[in-house]
Image (tube, rainbow, N blue to C red; front, side, top):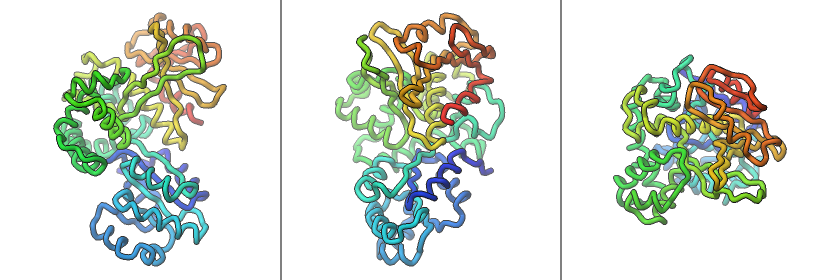
Length: 387
């Protein structure tokens, strides 16, 4: 079953203005399915296929001239020299919508784009489903967090405990080995598990490296790999030149909570609310939805967290523009408590922002200038964030 993705209209508009479009995102996020269904007038070549790759490599200029315009190159990072040829051909034609490049490794893609296609290409990101794209209706919070959002998992109804171990193994063997030479893949797999155990926490590279039995520089490099392949993102602290001391290290989150649950060895959704990391998992779920809906709206997320050295913390700060700021305080408890509002009242820029308490309960209202957003209203809010 094909699910139309929200980003589709954005991609079609961008192709009317740019000669080349880049679509990156995690492996299995649905890039190929979207491109084949929505751009059927484009010729399709998968550069992971040796025959497709060799056909192009033998005579790139001749191939590009014969195939003409409207061509999709999937997993384009597999033939990085292609980007230089695309620059020359697309400049000669001078028309929009000539090529679509797709790939699951943003580091390799962006490196070649900056060298060859800067100013000629629009870069978009397709994440796994956001909540509003899910084909199932009214799932429970525990099921949402446990299952995650990868399209194939929902399309085939494959069980998470069957999907994610295979996904992790494929990711490590294909993406990680091609991005960087890592001798001990088992150590990298354990490192991913340790990152999952730190979901929603401030990143401490020394502690992480010590627990993983690796050097700090290695941990830093592996964090970069997980970012480049869209497994994790780092939420940076927000600051506006305030005099109070602020925490300056980022927090670590995963793009998909189902992957986190798998790395934490959960095998059924009932384990989620009982897990000691449930609060962090719910927080990860909300913040990843903010990030995904932003990308799927064709925008670059300006999302942060706020934490003072005295412990006052706001989970999510969204800067839509300099004077348009939204603050989310995220609580996993289903019963509203006025103590949930305490930090929202203490931030020094409280008068400048729209303040929301996000929690999985049923009560939605406004209390002391804070919008209380329960589960039923949460996704209307997310849908409106990037309008």
